[in-house]
Image (cartoon, rainbow, N blue to C red; front, top):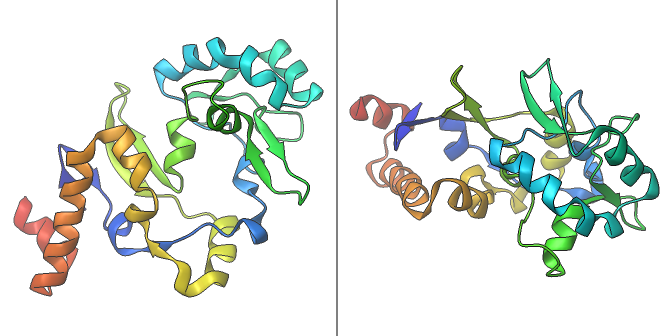
Length: 205
């Protein structure tokens, strides 16, 4: 583990390589699983405030479910709030294109300039997950390995990049430029000194 700005960072976030292969997985992370996308506390109000502007991008069924359940739901299994789900397990904000690839109605509304919120940070960071302590404070970053991602990711080989670089924009959005630059520094230190990240972690303790 590495320590960056009082945040524990799994070595895998720096060492492992990753890239989405939407042609293969079809964006299954938007409909697979038992819980909605984890939400930050401030995102609960944000989703409520933008739901009417996002509504035109969603199906009638999704909008009806939002009217019934709201934009967020408390999931006991993860002891936190997440985006509400459709009866089939899909996120209420999920869309699909003509190829059957899942997308995000929130993200599309953002790209069209309709709203200024990109999408929940947990979605932006995925497959990196932020772990919280009992007080609700962030304390660690982990690589969330999921077979639906791993199987399709393995098919694209050389197109994969280091995981922390894959989620660069999300890391900067969440933690700031300085945090990302420290990850780059530690990565470069390991490469230059030809020592492992484990050794660097030991030196930093």
